[in-house]
Image 1 (cartoon, rainbow, N blue to C red):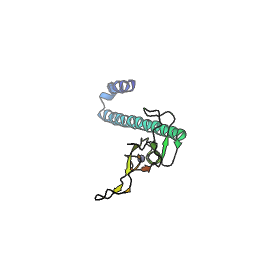
Image 2: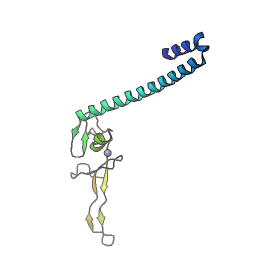
Image 3: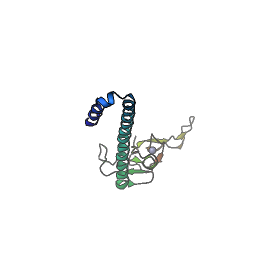
Length: 140
Ligand SMILES: [Zn+2]
């Protein structure tokens, strides 16, 4: 850290050591400098995140309520669905999970099924649920 070294050298100068006011001012300047350094690092991180999200938005194949990316696949080689709401609302890439999105209705006495379970994709971050009508994955 050359910058810290420079500061130490300045603080060790006889003119500085003999001047309490100057020493205190320099310490203040240095504290500000460290804060700016932290802020800069944080902003760089946010910028990178934002660039990544822009990239995802450009490459996303958008369906109703979710999107997939050609290069993100599960073990079976199928593209993973991600939450479209979270991408635009929160700037986050959140995978959606397959499962029951709405429980069915059954008469306990007769066992008659009024309504089957509805399967689909769920986002655990924002709570978006998408019913899937095809039986492509509805075996479980
Ligand atoms: Zn979401």
